[in-house]
Image (cartoon, rainbow, N blue to C red):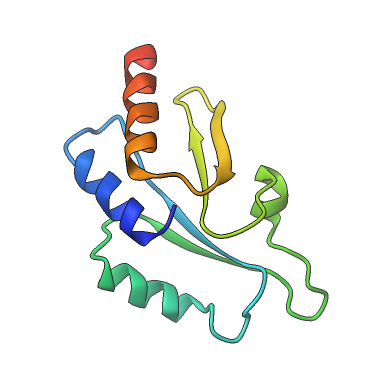
Length: 112
């Protein structure tokens, strides 16, 4: 789920308080340029009004950030969709905006 997809989804669901988006920049390579400042720059560039976190890995040991281990993610862009009750519904490399929209709408119907 790259920035264009996040932008489309946040726009689609901006008036629905049952849908929450959060982006986490997981740094597992490119430690020198994948900084928190770059994250903020991209947030402004895409005009994303969502919480965005920076989770750096360890550049010396090449350990990935804990969130990557916790959710078993493996690349960028990675998408995780979590239901209201905390169940991971989708956890894969990339997702198209249309696919995510259908998934979220289905969750809204189920969780109603």
